[in-house]
Image (cartoon, rainbow, N blue to C red; front, side, top):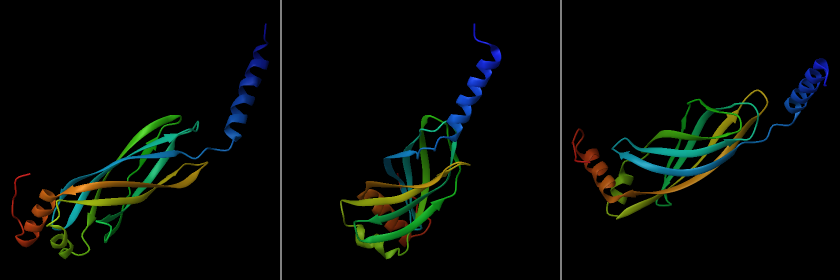
Amino acid sequence: MVHPARSALAAALALVSSACSKPQPPTLAPERATVTAVDAQAIHLDVTLTAKNPNSVDLTVSDVTAHVVLAQKIDLGSMTLPKAYTLPAGQATSIDAPMTVPWGDVNALTQLATAESVPFTVDGTVELGGSLLHVTVPYHLTGTMTRQQLLGATLRSLVPGLALPR
């Protein structure tokens, strides 16, 4: 029979040794960037990422940043979503980050309005951390805006308040 004090000591030593091990960086899998709306002020995107926390402690996402480029030439700039997410220990978690990226130049809409579709890229980072670990993890996503989304945004920029069917 194992003495209860020895059993407790073994459990305490196991806990201390696991707490002292170096934390592992989380992994980030970009899933998709979906255009939810385009208007005269901005492009609205839903960025979806899956983060896996291999550690035995929860980690916190403090913000998600996105840098959007349309048609490989129109740089919309960056935006940061300062929203906290918790990544539970030892689990994969979906991060859904709704982003609103303002147009730097509304004239860019007219340059794109004749295209059937416009490819875009989203390059960003996710700030992750906790008391033992703080890392910035990059991601890259691609997507396409439809001609209908672009034409609607162009018309709304020319006629503010115009309601168009979705």
